[in-house]
Length: 120
Image (tube, rainbow, N blue to C red; front, top):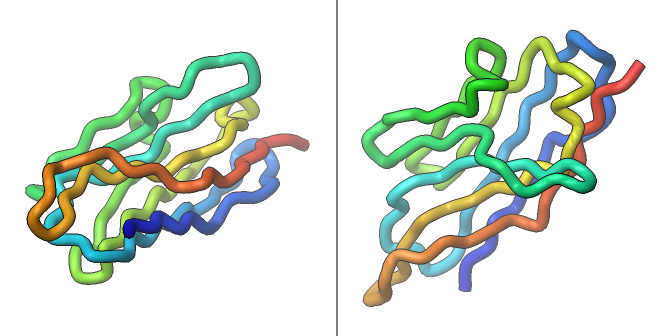
């Protein structure tokens, strides 16, 4: 019923930039918040950045000042601009949306993940 389709991952050198995008589609009634999480090998999934329907943003301390999250409400899309990338940013990045379908409760939905590799 809901699909989150991510794009924009890849291989980049340290200090480089990447832009991730995620588009939500389906019988969506409202989106409360969207965000990005990441999971590196051997580590737990962690929040990278999130943005609410009102535009409030939240960032992990490790990415503050380097990453910027933005949302295009009309397109049900969330973007993550990642600058000054470091090798420790290497991970699979997952899009998340906390949304409700018509007549249904708010629930968490996840994308399939996109690999980001920062390496020289």
